[in-house]
Amino acid sequence: MKNIVVRFCGDSGDGMQLTGNMFAQLAAEMGNEISTLPDFPAEIRAPQGTLGGVSAFQVELGKEVYTSGDKADVVVAMNAAALKVCTLGSHFNHPEARFDDQFALYHRHAIVIVDTDSLTDKDLEKAQYHTANPFEELGVPESVQIVPVALTTLTKEALKESGMDNKAVLKCRNMFALGLIYWLFDEPMEKAIHLLEEKFKKKPALVAPNTKVMVDGYNYGQNLALNVQQVHLEEVQGKDVQSTKGTYTSIAGNKATAWGLIAAAEKAGKRLFLGSYPITPATDILHELAGRKDMNVMAVQAEDEIAGVCTAIGAAFAGDLACTSTSGPGLSLKSEAVGLAVMAELPLVVIDVQRGGPSTGLPTKTEQTDLLQALYGRNGECPAVVIAASSSANCFDYAYEACKIALENMTPVVLLTDTYLANGTALWRIPKLAELPEIKPQSVPEELKGKYNPALRDERGVRYWAYPGLEGYEHRNIGLERDAERGTISTNPENHERMVVARKHKIEQIADAIPELKVIHGEGLGGKCTKDTLLVGWGSTEGHLHAAANELGCDLAHFNYICPLPKNTREVLRGYKRVIVCELNTGQFAAYLRSQFPEIEIEQYNEIQGQPFAVERIVHFVQSE
Image 1 (tube, one colour):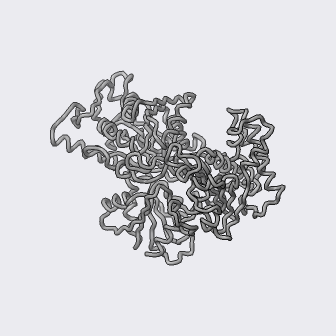
Image 2: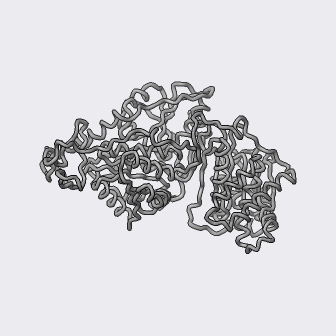
Image 3: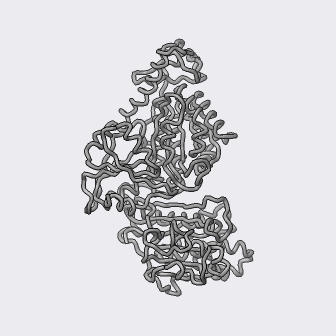
């Protein structure tokens, strides 16, 4: 196989995220491209063994990986609830539901490894089974290769002389399952052991027992010659499949975002300041930057979202690269302060890691529902730049780009990522600082010394940036409307309109500096689809739409720059008979494009289920219309 999808699932305390991450990391180190989907329950800690407490981690690995996969080829189910959720998909709460190719989270020819010790009568009752045979009740097809393994018993046996208590022993079950998966994929155990040692280097007491259990899991598969086919990835296993030479690693979107901010500050010669407040799923950005004092980073956990953004605005006034991070509810709270940064024309990067809403909503699930809030969610005529990352890896690139645009154009920039990108991981080539685009922060000319005022602009219409400590450039910067010539407070009607137009023009001219929209040509045979069809998306859906375009044989235009749009957007869209905008909301980007290009007929494909797209559903929609 050239690509394969593996899904680890179990209770929230079963270590599925750690297990999946370790497997994905080793796959990346062996030269595979990867894309991952951590799928957390929305509850902080649902009752153990229940359907609401199932936690999962899915990874696709191989060559030309665009998504974390639609359906799994290999499943590890640590308990009865996990087996049910994986088998029934979104219908797991329906009492009469049975395995269905449309809803199941694995193929009908998949390998399903199940902990038989977790299929007791009590476990089945918690997971709302009605019979003693879960496989028959769920309608699992005979073509599925079920591998029953007594994971709990085998783990206890492996550690019976360790001196560990029963609770600590049971926490190692996931490592036995991981060792079994390493055997299934014929992975080198020496590398796996080294990776485990790195994971637990701050807790050395855990290294020996987890290593023993993992090795025992590997040997269990090898020695007993389990009745299951081993999996080999053609032309990928053990080879470097990257077209660009360099050092590669697996990186999560939030960490990539944080590193992009650090790199931009270093390139711009600025101190990085983050004013933030913890919120799922954005908190990891704050965590990462709080530990980087060695890179001259200042991270402040403020008392609330409003204080977080206001401290960042103060840092921008003082001459720093200023950022604030949040999710949808926090972006709502920050809206007035972002308006202050627009009025004061200060550089500010606002990172919104989107999640399911409204209100508390689905805090661990993914959506693209903050787009219109990012574009228009401020009072008055209040334009700001909006860009979006499209993979966990390029969160680095667009965090860097957000900083570049903000510093060079004296404007707030909203960077949209989402839960899928933030928690997921992808293979990433570590760039050298010299390779990154130059950042030239806006400054103030020497000839304005002694006669500077905050209304003065360069030929692009961008306000000059003078900050405290520069002798001869003392000034006031205000949140009230300013006179276009002197920078003093003004309530003059004509002046207000002039300033509204000036701030709007400043954003529009940024289109001259951003890349034109590129069209990706699908490589498939086409089927019912033709080259007259254009799929359109933005943000985290790029991989899924790219895979769909390849299968359909149609073209794809994917947007990372949303406000302003690339200058050739109208030209691209007008070149197709059928334009289909696909997004994880009810049609926000489609509505935005219609407002900009009313002459273009636009179709929509929308999902709002807290999960990424499934490629097969996009293909079905396009071919059935």
